[in-house]
Image: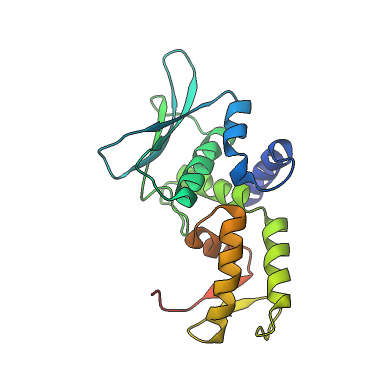
Length: 197
């Protein structure tokens, strides 16, 4: 699928299931409306993050490693598994078992279907029109920002601008900083050239 097709599918899901607010608060409602069951499962395999699976009776399940303590990571994992479902990815042997290196919040997965599910998750959690409007609004209201439609974040005054925007948007959309940075880069709104601390 093309990115545009994935964005359109995520927008359809958003329009149907998110009457107000943001999608991370509606993930459980989306799952229930689609008659999928959500299960948090213990796993001794620290590489296991999530799965979309079909039971013997045909029931679909989204499984999430209960060891994921970071709520932003959990949100992205659920949105990723919903991506497999809404993009009609064919289950191989009744399961999509997704590992840490496949559900990536800030880079492209190697396997095409995993990359599509990652992109869907970003689009569902951070719809372009909402993120773009919020980000540009904050940037335009920043007294320090010299450019008001793009942010190049370096180890200078731009980093403090980024910290304020990051804090607000990660909370608003229920995502990690990594997922937010990746989405802003995808949308051509920001570039990041700072040392991670």
